[in-house]
Image 1 (cartoon, rainbow, N blue to C red):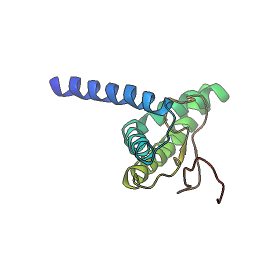
Image 2: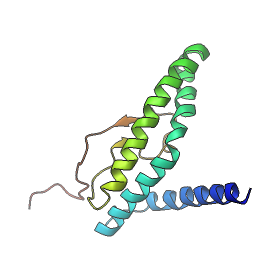
Image 3: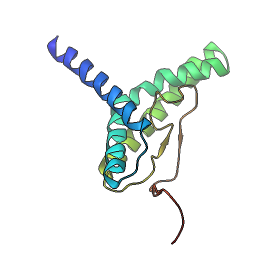
Length: 130
C-alpha cells in the first residue's frame, strides 16, 4: 500500500515539475540537457497512456467499433514508439537535440495523433552559420 502511494506521488510530482520545466525558455546547454533527460524519462513512464489516447481519438474520428480495435492497435504501436524514443532521449541526453516524438509529452495536445520526427536534429537557437 505504501509503495503504490509513493509511486503515485512520485509520478504526480514528476508530471508537475516537467510541465513547469517545459513552459520555461531553454537557453543554456544545461537546461537543454535537463529538459531532454526529463522528457525521455516521462515518455518512458507515460508511454502506456498511448493506448487509451488512441482509442479515444480514433473513436472520435470514426465510430466505436473501429475506434476500439483500430485505436488499440495504433495505441500499442505508439506505446512502443514513445517508449523507444524516451529511451533514446534518456541515453543521448548530453546531446542537445530536439525531441523525436511529437507532441513531446502525451498530455500536450491530447487530441493530436502522435508523430515522429527525424532523429538527432540539433536544438539550436539560431540557424545562422556565423
